[in-house]
Image 1: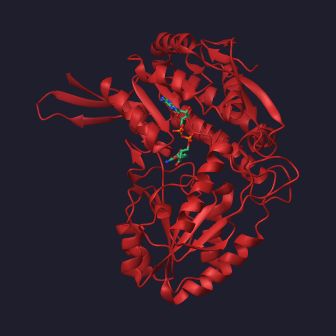
Image 2: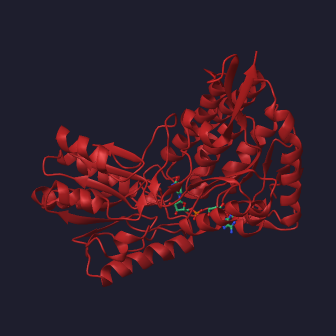
Image 3: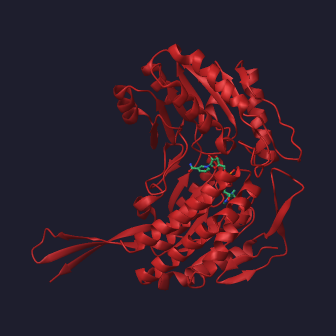
Length: 476
Ligand code: NAD
């Protein structure tokens, strides 16, 4: 059993959760301790006790700790990528890329630790000065989803530590492996005991205990809209700072003047890479009439050619769905689209492979209407639709016809339309001639509407959430 990390100690529990390979359900990677109420309380107390010293720690110490973690993640990216592909089902190049991204995030925040600054302002009163400084918020709870098993824990934990907070991390129960490796590296990084604590296991126990703990002063959550609402209510009860990153229903608009190769590649990547299990996936392809049939022909061909199989097979281009529950959800959406009259152009069936796994063909529906269920709710699987648009204005209206607002993309060579779309797409991130998924690690990440709540993640904008501003008045 892989134990919990609490106050610098490795702690086993009476129950453990098996970590099962979605490419081969006979392959049990390991089992991970299931944190109960008692362990959650210990971790919260540890983070509380360790907070004050870490909040006032020298920035050199913070830099060195974060650099150590980033360096080791980078050295071990191939090994961690392999584990990630095995536990989540992403193909190996994507998984190694994610491990590398986690390393670069720690490296970025190692640098940020040395760039902490403030502001000095004149007061409106004579002889008085004003200083603004950023201070850590307190013990921070971090709850993460299964689809980015190391990048999301990294992009929350690294800034939390950089800005002087103590942390309790609760990774998704389906993918504890990568978070555990990251925790093991952190445990040898020189970080004082109790500043970082790891609780593995289901959210309804350890996660819920974190939500109920008044000592946790900020909560950063990425996951589903439903759980996000539970998190939000608890945070309001405790007057706690919160950051929620939730679902998406991201549009990719293809205008008549788009380069067909660019547009179909962007759609294929955005819809199906990482098995469509990205919050930034392009699930609604909004296509202008004049290019519609050629776009659908070419995308159908590319979609059918994608090789589905086990994540570690070098021939595989799209790995399995993460588990049976998610697979059932994907199949349910496919059935509902069929019933609603959508035209199935590619995929739609389970895929048989040599190993027992959760394989689903990449699935493309055309001629769908914006009000069909398939275009309203997040599938979170390899399923995309096309919707016909009569012109640019209609395409923009369709793109914005969703409760979500994470990313939005447009394929066009028109500067006028690209510029207008950047300004009018209701999304936190806009891509031009690029897939809606695939973002840099050093710039803000987040959405609008039902996709996100609270300050942006990543880059130097992460300071907004992980610090609080103090205003000091000084009479000289
Ligand atoms: P989920 O909401 O089921 O779980 C997310 C985390 O919350 C897990 O660690 C889980 O254990 C925990 N949790 C569950 N119930 C809890 C409770 N009652 N109290 C406290 N914690 C609890 O989401 P998921 O299925 O792991 O992830 C998929 C979702 O994540 C999708 O909707 C996807 O769009 C979203 N996502 C969003 C982003 C983004 O940045 N917007 C990024 C990745 C994933």
